[in-house]
Length: 164
Image 1 (spheres, rainbow, N blue to C red):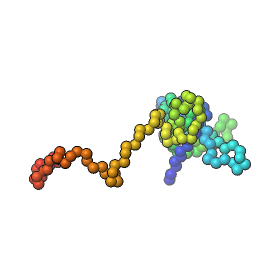
Image 2 (image 1 turned 90 degrees about the horizontal axis):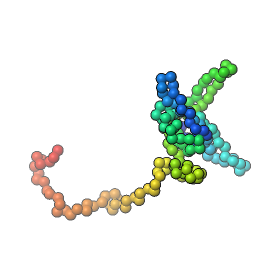
Image 3 (image 1 turned 60 degrees about the vertical axis):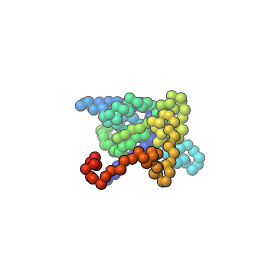
Image 4 (image 1 turned 30 degrees about the vertical axis):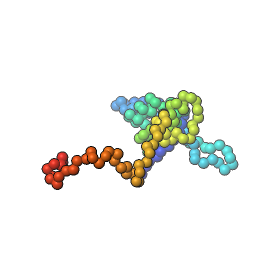
């Protein structure tokens, strides 16, 4: 069976870090995730508010580096949890158990107050310009050696001279 989910959205509140009785860190947060489509009548896009939970080092990472409004990419699994409320009613809730959480925007974008530009996904962590790609070598990926042929020494047919 396969249960894998990847979502990208903005944190609706600061993550809440708690610890279990045995000291394991768990962070709870929720993401506002826009739907991919707009309504036919031209209205605003709908937004889903998805609860997430991150355990151990991932939870500590989220609580330390993410705040309300930051763009996050969460990869994990969908979990349906049953519980009983204070009135004794059985309830169910869906949440994403995060395996990995990535930055969906750069810190520089967040500090300048600019809005999400749409190209941050896949570029998170790239704070500078990318280095220029090297020129493509000739002959389909093979580049001829630049050293003159006189720098090479011929070996005799004796295998004893081989280093392996």
